[in-house]
Amino acid sequence: MTEKIWEGELVENRVIVWGSEAVQIYDESGYGKPLPEEKSDRVELELVEAAYLLEKEKLKVFEKVSGKKKKLDFSDLMAIGAKNVNQFHPQFVVYKDLRDRGYLVKTGFKFGTHFRVYERGVKLKRGPKTEHEHTKWVVHAVEEESAFSLPEMSRAVRLAHNIRATLIWAVVDKENDVTYYQLTRLTP
Image 1: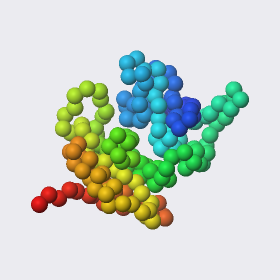
Image 2: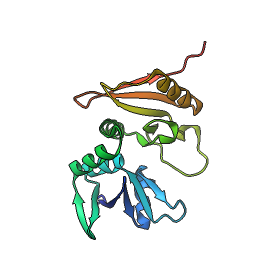
Image 3: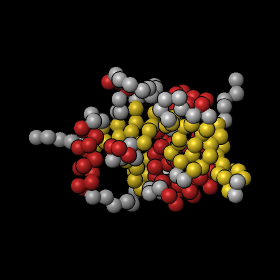
């Protein structure tokens, strides 16, 4: 059976997959966010998700220019991401690495990080969750040369601790290799 290739439209900083069947991309693989929640007629993908799916040839992306569809390739979408999203490149590298390793990865903005990551095999679902289905890690992606403040890092560790997750600092080097550092809170 041939795997479906989705089509999405770039709208501002999101890629929208239109149609009620689009919710399959969320239900089956955890990509995007179905909207509205009840009787969804679209799924909104973050740019990092769309870039990943485009690179994997599971998504075609277009934008409307003067009423006509203009197809975007991977480099186009990466350039748009770099222009509109702070630290887009390291976020993409980390997102790709985690997805390629089989983890379910969602945005972590409300937790003050780039991503929230679930254990392998977890499927997103609405409503109450078992302990296994909760966020396991929150991941912040940075470039190797990036500066950061210790108070910022301390806040991130405390926030992760509050939601019973572990903070992972993902450092991307010039060769696009990722080194993961686990940061935990110690209380004497």
